[in-house]
Image 1 (cartoon, rainbow, N blue to C red):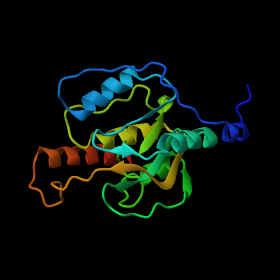
Image 2 (image 1 turned 90 degrees about the vertical axis):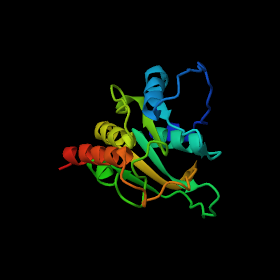
Image 3 (image 1 turned 120 degrees about the vertical axis):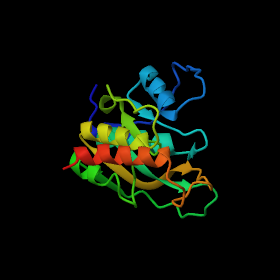
Image 4 (image 1 turned 180 degrees about the vertical axis):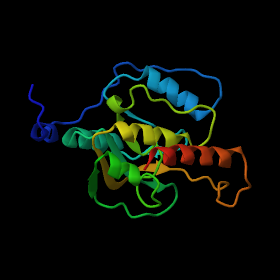
Length: 193
């Protein structure tokens, strides 16, 4: 069948769980659970949802539709924090090539280096896993997947709802968590010219 962009935008987006599988794992690092999910994923796209967060009602439909319409490998969106009154913007979008998108990963404003506000094509995840047993593993995973993506689209629309932990702040003492942040940033920076 013809799968031109024009046809994609007129197709209804329908989601059917064809192979629902529950995997049990002892309590461990989030990266281990995510890697298990990647290894067992089927289909063309993958998105990550943290257990204390939630998608807006239109998250999946808008993200997948954008991926189909633009043939982008990664779709990013804005997010809103729980309990905060924030104006939900209408959807502006920006398309980036690989180098442009990577240069914006560490921007304070924008899509940032989280995996939970992104939809990834399985093509750009193939062979990539989260580094296990360290914090801030999203930075490494985002860099690696963005490096393989042909096109990244950033939807400036708050489609993901993030629970902000009150106990986490920039004033915390140095710990292994801070060291892992530095390791992740060092990995990222060592690959960017």
